[in-house]
Image (cartoon, rainbow, N blue to C red; front, side, top):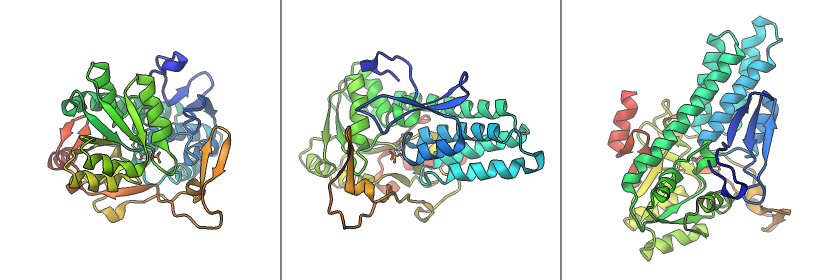
Length: 353
Ligand code: MRU
């Protein structure tokens, strides 16, 4: 991704540094106020970074956790060979427990763990697998950008929610990929950016990414979207996803379901976009979703450049589910590396895989 204000042409939100032998993460908690890249050399530190959302966005979390398995292999280098599997699995469980909804994490972790075992705990092979999975996912996101062009028209006014841009996917993005591509191809659109309470990923991160690309946008409070649809001021919705079931049901940032219901009511096409690693090959029903509950402080406090500000009655409790569930009947299409698919086409392609 390009960061105009820092003059950076090529930067990724998750990367492996071969000289320092560590994972490097753009600290997404600081965007848009500061730009900082942190080094992570232990699995424990990395788990904390995933939990506290230094790195966030389903595909980026998946990539970070895959590199985490490489770190784990390095950490167990000197353990007796008979206990290596047990030790590696303990570290893998720590990684799996960090963010339960985003299935990319489990998908990437298991695929990297398998190579660690099959290569007899070769650090080089494990690292290679983490890099391979990341590169593959980035390529898919690039294709999502190209394929998504078929639904974008000059003058579109597009609603997006949370952040599904380059930072959330290491590079390119999912929901933002076609919008960025269109803009680079000279097709001008306007984006309405839901602020996305409680953590404000839209107001902070999506707005910043769109600004870096010079794409016209306005931040709106989450409750404004339905009003704008009723006024025919939004003609498309494009969002990312954290998990897609075999029948096309998706889980995404809390608030997605109400956007989908409103879009259906107002006849606004609603698109979900994701790489193949966001598909949960194991689960069939919405009950299988593991909806992450996050600390109530995220609702009661807002973070700004100076620190945290209490914005709610201090003695009240707060309920903070991070994701909700949207059924296929509310989804117009899925923007993927295999094209813009209907539910039926998506289900068929998942089966073919
Ligand atoms: O809690 P977050 O910020 O990790 O949630 C992220 C989202 O809900 C994104 O929409 C999703 O991960 C897709 S990112 C391409």
